[in-house]
Image (cartoon, one colour):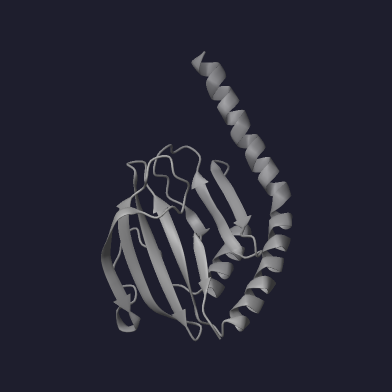
Length: 181
């Protein structure tokens, strides 16, 4: 029984990596279209925007990193932690949120850990393009998605061998807030 399961698992991993290889060019094209949509959006807000990266944990907690960009430069990074309301979808407002820290321009990158790195969305598009250029291991699962406006939402891999609190490699944006021009 165990041997059959192992063979099936290996076959699924191989099939996934083969399908991934065929889809890369499609995702690269979609990313290029999305990047053009982003360039238009960035111009309409004159390079003033914020975005959030939410990481949810198996324990029922989450952290939300907010990156604030002014004049196309990261000016602030904030980390808030809290509980996830049971049965609620991703992005639901946290219960009992606590601001762990706030970094301003001169302090950016000071705090290590599970917070998103202080990058502009342009840098995130570059990270996504690099990820799609590969290589991606057979055991890694690729996720790529865009929001309703066509902007990049996710382009990351996870190790399919890990069950809980699996770290993402790549880009995962929960929310984009465009500023006023």
